[in-house]
Image 1 (cartoon, one colour):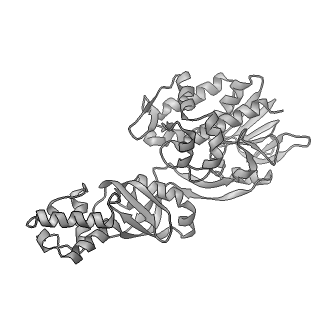
Image 2 (cartoon, rainbow, N blue to C red):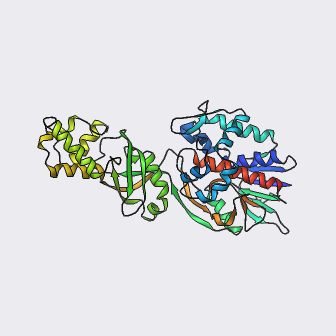
Image 3 (spheres, rainbow, N blue to C red):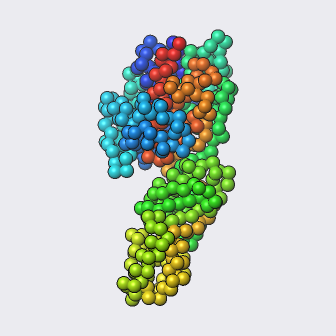
Length: 407
């Protein structure tokens, strides 16, 4: 039996190795359009490769996926992060868990993961073809598939086909030609471009816990926030960019954002804290003491935005009106987003092959027998932290395993 896999990324390699190891009588060929395979694996995690996340409860794991979570509930019960850890461990790649739950190879080198995948595809007798410029993918009369190449001289035929082309438009085009609908792809996991007095000159400062909301919608996320030269980044921003990917795209990445710098306190509790500070330290300068653990320069900027003079203003001078103005800035800073930036090249796409058309027990198409999908070609995307790789490993494993035994 011939199995062709298009796409030399994480999902494609995992599907190829799984298929070949599961059924050594299969002829497995992995096709990659460029000269370099596993490009995203190489750059992930700043070159360290964030392999997966230490979340071992499938019901909790699916909550990290803005799109595709419910569909992944069953697959994660069959192959989840603990299985990923065991898979790599059995092939000589030990992983370590960091404080935030991300897992990396103990070598801190993505090349360790790349070498493992290439070596074990070789050991499993997977044929790897680079610079494979495929022109068309078509159903073959009587079943199976035929691939035509740009040279017009070569064709390949197979009994089974796994598409693991990521967010490549050509992969979406082939999926449509084989009968599938594709949800329009738009970017996910990006930072926000913002020009505002509140942020000027503060690049590099961070706050461990804020809440950021897309104005006029219920969409909000909490987490650490990083001020950058171009605006805002950090986990809270990246998560909001993922969950609000379609809304922000429809707005042309021009939107109003509301930042609550002290989300752990209610408005009244926060006001009471400021009044207590005024009562106990009336002669202290408002900007001399950081009440909420903010970087000192940010605290001064927030106070200034509330109308507090940076030079010399004492707590005794703070009227109730000024205290309420400070509360408003601390819990409801309004910032105008006027663009987006890619997050460290680890771009992720929202959109892809419609999930209702795929059997998530096997990753086989419900429309085109013998066709399987794995990875980001599907309308699945996770937040940052190893979740996108985990969906690639899981769907690749299921697709490879099913293709190896398909009738």
